Each structure stands twice: as structure tokens, then as C-alpha cells.
Length: 64
Image 1: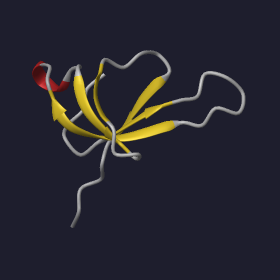
Image 2: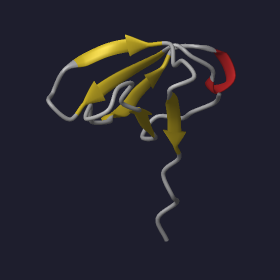
Image 3: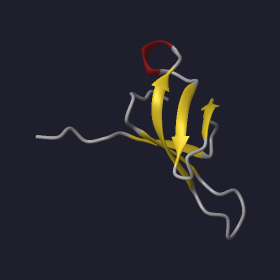
Image 4: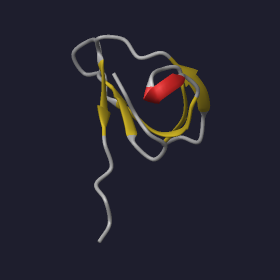
């Protein structure tokens, strides 16, 4: 799993009715885009994440 600053990290809900948790990657702490990542979530909380199998990276699209 590789990411760059500005990409979104999405942690999918693990049980029925649990919403996905979406955050912006504000710092890539590993080498060559690898985890861990510092993530700022929609509620303003920041944390360091090492994504698991229930997580996806949504790469930002280049602006023209």
C-alpha cells in the first residue's frame, strides 16, 4: 500500500451500520509512500495509522 500527502485513507466499517471513517493523509512517515501515515480525519482528530485489510487509499487526482 503506497500513498502520498493529500490522498484519502478510508477505514471501512467492520460491522453492519458502522460508517466508513475518512481522513486525509497529511504526512507519509514510511519510505517510498509506505505506512505509517499521519491522518487528519473529518472530525479534526489526527492520528498515526498503519492501515489494515479493511482500509483503502484513494489517490487524489491531479488538477489541470
